Length: 351
Image 1: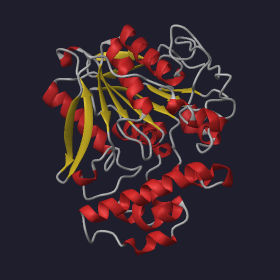
Image 2: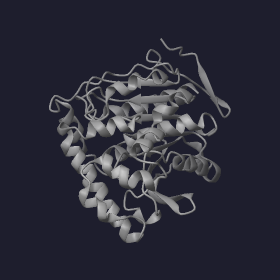
Image 3: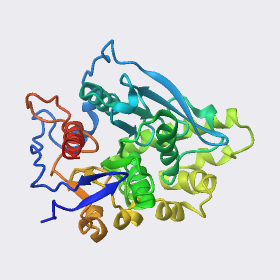
Image 4: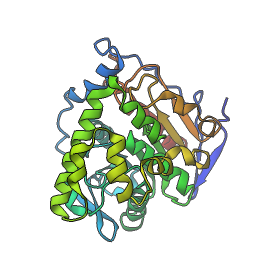
């Protein structure tokens, strides 16, 4: 059992480490309509979420994270933002600020009295014109710069960073790199993170996952064509017609654009797995053992299992970022979002 008395000091306020006994979670009970990982992965996105309440403001803001790189975000500020916790949310591959889980978690943050910022990764959410680069698993420092800016310019010094899928890898990677050097970052959470990108790409390319693989490859190809129109001459598109796999796309375009030798080098260097042992802030990882393309065996890594700052929740079912639960009042059906809310709330209550 992990020692719930251990604490990490961030800034001036120690945050206690909360283990499974200190913070019990309602078990995930899948909705009976969504049996199997594919239904659980695909159908929750179509569940009606409704509009944000009229009193919940949305501010478009571009964070200049590098001289030629801007990240387009949607900010939801409470009155007197520095007096409230702030939750930053990063989407997964080919998602955006409008992905259903981004909106769902932002609404829960607002109802809790917290600020939230939904972040588009580079080139996502119609922001291709804001950077001459592509986006990839290694760009964790983009989010460190946002955390620094809102602390220095907005006075928001109690921050949690949440990432889904690829965004989860970026979140965990930043936590491993920064340690406690970002004093306002109080904790991170990752849902179905691809902590070993090579293993995840291999799983994605299995015949049983053809639907996801085709979707991602088609979307990335279309985005690259759009980027080439905005920034002529940066990419040779003659290879696109011959690309059949994600690995080939990353080999020819993503890796060299990011400064990596090849796809294998890119996957290895950008893996959050490399920094799990260095994480020294409260960390929550939620993944499903039946995720179609996030292999569960990755989470048996000793660096993860032995780190007292990391709490792993791994239900047998849940698909990829699905976790659509059986009716459980007073919660809505989105189990992972509710667990993230509970986890942050418990840390705030004990600080």
